[in-house]
Length: 79
Image (tube, rainbow, N blue to C red; front, side, top):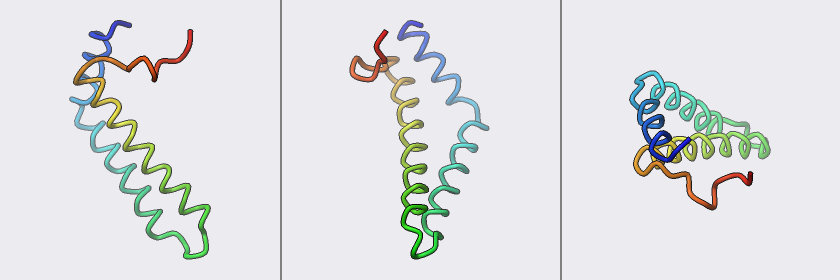
């Protein structure tokens, strides 16, 4: 897949309203789970926080690809 094809695909995905709402809900659920974790459940809180960070990174990554079409040399998996 070329960088231009990647860019167009990412833009198409971001243009779907359901996609944005779904990721908003997933992020909100992870943040709420982090906030409302039992005070002594440190591992659970960390897991929920990691989930929220991962959701944000995925969305930011997709937005980055949509803007420039490149994954970047450091991010590409070895062949």
